[in-house]
Image: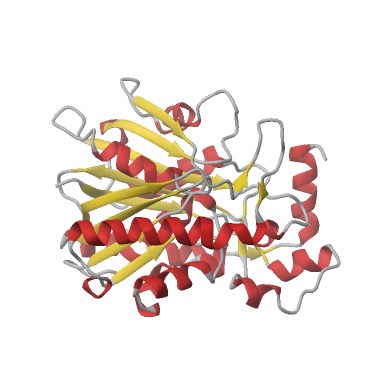
Amino acid sequence: MTGIVSYGTYIPKYRIKPSQIAHAWGKETNEVEKALGVFEKAVASVDEDAVTLAVEATLNAAMPLNFDLTKIGAITVGSESHPYAVKPTATTVAGILGLPENLLAVDLEFACKAGTSGIQLLSGLINKDTKYVLAIGSDVAQSKPSDVLEYTAGSAAASFILGNKDTLANILDFTSYSSDTPDFWRRDTEKFPSHGGRFTGDPAYFNHVISASNLLLEKAKLKPADFEFAVFHMPNGKFPKEAAKRLGFKDEQLKPGFIVSQIGNPYSASSMIGLAATLDIANPKQKIFMCSYGSGAGSDSFIFETTPLLKQFQKKNSKNVQSQIQNKQMIDYSLVARNIINKYRI
């Protein structure tokens, strides 16, 4: 059965508090963090981008099992902050990692669900000739200075090596739900994305997450109580909890993978890091429900079941999600602002 052979994440060590961003722009600071449910967000350094984050996450995925990356037969990199408009991120990442050149390499872009789309697409390629594939979600999330997005837009990457032998968690089923819902967009000539404000809630996030989740639950003939854990895309600290409540999941099922309050929303990596954090503490033979969300709009929902090999992996994984969350250095907003000015020439 196809599943996760190994996984790794990379969270930059720099952090900033949303209240400090609000203060810099002369906005109300007292309630911003509580209102969003986000108290710190991860910030990429000046020499980090979606490529370097993806490379670090993949090296962290290979390290616990000393996995030979030359066995990878296909790679996808999902992101909405690819360094180049025309030049694939996937080939750059593959070259740095030393992957073989007889390789399928593809960039994916579907807002915050491009990484999970890679898991779906690549799982169908695993066979006797292509034994292992690599699905990555990596973003240095873009936001216009002083926009509400700036409070939550974070930076991180997650990398999942998939195969059909010696799996840590098997993919039991998945499905998707998509529509043309323009809640979030960035035209080719624009530097920062725009969004539809409150329109991003019920017509966008909740409609797609709940629809994709219900489709899969009905397809698999399962209910929320059949799962030990659940992970949803985390644009803020309130949406995933509300979606879970509407579906019938409990807060305890979300808690292990609920990383948004500590690192913000790293877009394509959000739900994938939530899944990784859940795998970090899960036991064998437990079911995990996951549903991503990407603006524009669509959701991918998955059912995973862990295997006995997961406990061995956990013991070897010195760079689990919580260890990276705790390895942090708080920075001043002036450093972030200078980086934005230099990068986007504004």
